[in-house]
Length: 199
Image 1 (cartoon, one colour):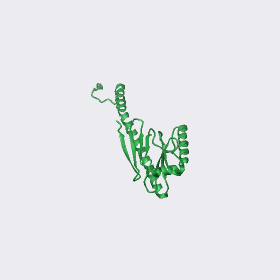
Image 2 (cartoon, rainbow, N blue to C red):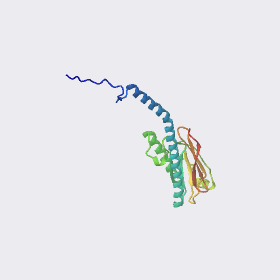
Image 3 (cartoon, rainbow, N blue to C red):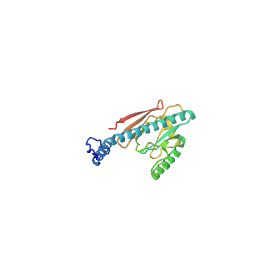
Image 4 (cartoon, rainbow, N blue to C red):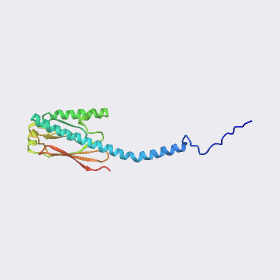
C-alpha cells in the first residue's frame, strides 16, 4: 500500500497578492507625492495662462496696427480696466465698443463662462494697470469725436502710418505673477516683460 505524502507548505513560494496594509501604504505615498506636486502644477498652469493672455493682447495690437495701415484709418485696442476683456476696432466706432464690452461682461456674469475667447484673457488673468501716453495726434482724434474712452475702458490708438501711442499694459494672475506689455509708439510694435516671477 502506497501512501502519498503531501509536501509541507513552502515558505519560499512567492505571494500573489498584496496585503491591505501594503496597499494602504502605497496609497498614502501616492497622496503625499501628489500633494507636494500640486502647487508646482498649479503654478505652471497659472504661468501658461498669463503668457497666453499676453500673447493674445500683443496679437490684438498687431492686428490694430495692420488694419490701421491697410484701411488708412485710426484703429484702437480697447481694454477693460481691472477686467479681462479687450477688443480691436476702428476708433470711430468707440461707442459701439463700449456697448459691446458692457454686453459681453453681462453675459460672462450671467453665464459664469465666456464665449468670447478671442477677446478675453484666460480665466484667472486680469488687467491690473494700464498707462497710455497722450500725444498731439491722440488729442486731435479725441477732440474730433468728443470721446474720452468710456467708463472703465482704456483705448490705445494706432495710426495709418504704422505708429501708435506709447502704452504699458500690466496683467496679473491669481497667484501674483505679473507681466507687462510695452508698446513703443514710434514703431507701433510691442514686447512682453515679466515683472514678477512666480515662486
